Image 1 (tube, rainbow, N blue to C red):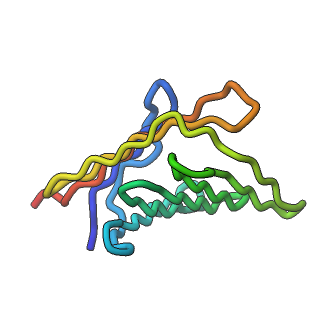
Image 2: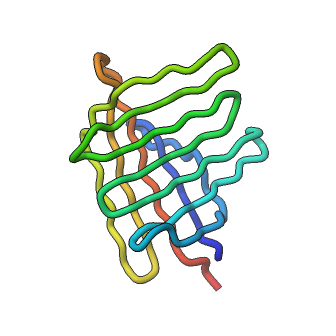
Length: 128
């Protein structure tokens, strides 16, 4: 099935994605969204659950972000030169579901840094 997805990032809420995306059920309470970005030669896969989230990014390098506010969260970056891994401090994770729309708000920072990363994703049924 398809969903209209809008992804905002950064404190200025810059539009990173505003297109249709493939959507599939994931587990018993989750959804998987595949955000294809051919103009940027890559894609992102968001697996969104009630209490956790997993983001896979495939661009020049492969990035895996695992958000589990009640547990250890981490980011892993795979490059041609090797892997880097770091823990994350989750500042905010919320998932709001209605019959026709899903909204996810995510704020985190890498352990040991002050840089805060922000994402707001909205997925809704396509307008007929």
